[in-house]
Structures are given as C-alpha cells and as structure tokens.
Amino acid sequence: MNKKVILITGTNSGFGWLTARSCAASGHRVYATMRDVSSRNADKAQELVRQAGITVLDVDVTRSASVTDAVATVLGHEGRIDVLINNAGLYATGITETFTDDDLDNVMDVDVKGPWRLIRAVLPHMRQQKEGLIINISSVAGRFSVPFQTVYNSAKFAVEGLTEGLHYEVRPLGVDVVMVQPGAFPTEIFGKIVSGSDNTVIAGYGELAHVPGQMGAGVAQMFATLKPDPQLVADAILSLIDTPAGQRPLRTVVDPVAGSFTASANNSVKKEYDQFMTAFGMQAMLS
Image 1 (cartoon, rainbow, N blue to C red):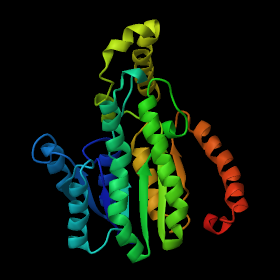
Image 2 (image 1 turned 180 degrees about the horizontal axis):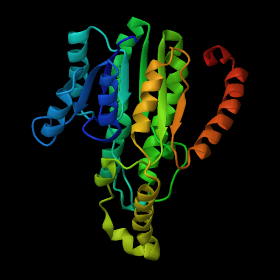
Image 3 (image 1 turned 45 degrees about the vertical axis):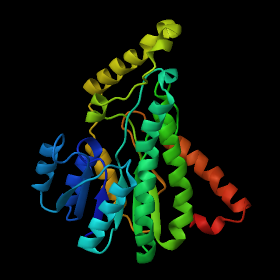
Image 4 (image 1 turned 60 degrees about the horizontal axis):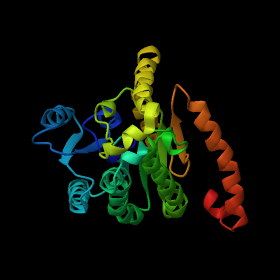
C-alpha cells in the first residue's frame, strides 16, 4: 500500500472520526482537524492522537487564516498533501421560513464555503504535485430535496455543483475531485441540529409545524430497526483512496436503506451529462 498524507475536517465525531481512525489503521498519515481541541473537544483530540499515525490540528473551517495555517503546517511536516476529505458540516432542519439571513449564512459558511476554503488552500500544491484526491462529503439530500431540511439540502446541492464542475476541470491536471453521498446514519450530527431562529412564523403553519418532529421520530425508529452502520461511509472513503487515480467515480452512494433511489438517479443523469459534454466539445474531459 502506498502511504498517503491525508487531511480530514470535522473529525471530532461521526464520519470524520471513523474515517480518521480507519485511514490511520490502514497505514496512512492522518491530520485530523476539529475546533476547540484544548477545551470542548479536548477528550476527543487526546483519544485520536493516542492512535499511531494521527496528528490533531485545531482548525475552524469558517476562518480562512485557520485553514491556510493548517495546510501550511501539514506541508511543513510532510512536504505534501495527497488527500483532502471535506467532512465538517452542520445539519439543519425545521420550517425553512424560520431561517433568517444570519441562520442561512451560518450553515452555508460551514457546509459550502468551508470546503471551498480547504480546496483553494490545497489545490495549488496538488497541481504542483500533478496528483491528489479531494473527497467532499455530500449527501443523498444533495441529489433530492427533502421537506423541512431545505436549508441543509441547499447547502449539499451547492457541494454537489462545486464537486461536479471541479471533477472535470482539474482532472486533466492530475487531481481527482469526487464526492460521497451518505444516507441517514446514527451519528452525533443528530444531536447537533441547527434550526431557524425566527419562531414567529411557526404558528402560521398549523399542523405542518409538527411534521419535522414526526420525521425525527421516524428516523430514530429506522435507526433502531435497521441499524445502518456509519463505518460503511469510512470504508467507502478508504476504497476511493485506494482506487487508482483517474478511475474514481464522481459520486459514491452509501445508503443501505434507500441507496438504489439515488444511485439510479446518478446513473441516469450521468448518461445525459456525457452527451451534453460531448455536444459542447468537452468529451476529452470525460476520460
């Protein structure tokens, strides 16, 4: 196995936590980032660094200086970055109208601009290396918009657009940009839900105001019954890392509950997209 230098965001829990540990266990050199490593996430940071191959960095993806400092640190120690995994994110649910401008900005700053800041920081080095892999964690909710998580869906739609365009744009330069589309998994993200702050509109929704809570109860029941394992996402990421450059698919669905729904849409759109690229003279970017 070719050991790679991997930078991962949002490793204090969930997919990021599992991916950091799995990558290190596979022999890779992992730089795991999270916020507040000396306070709120001190225990998580200390547990990660006890595993061989992991260094924890305190990084806030909403601050450009924090991002560029982290990238500079990794390059200073390793001389290269082979893989960037943009995993940090906020999960937002509730009646969409309750989200103010500031609420929307908060979600987009983390879920969309955060990955963009990391991408811009590592791309120059990957282009210089003439190789590299960027994996953005999207969602099945980046392909279909689910009611009452519209703000979250919008952010993931943006991640899809960012990833798809860059996938073709920088592949001729030796850099693979791909995404993973997880379904719903029982991770800590459901304990950190972001909601809109303008509650004055809720009364106008009548009985519909109860639907977000009912959806949450349904998801909890699904978790209890089907027990989807979030390690599947970490395993899919590892598989992408191990796949030869230029052969990695743009989208990888990881959804044991309803994954065929998203995979079918991906396959159908891919056929039409290839025809579109060919019609506009860009067929060379498809291979």
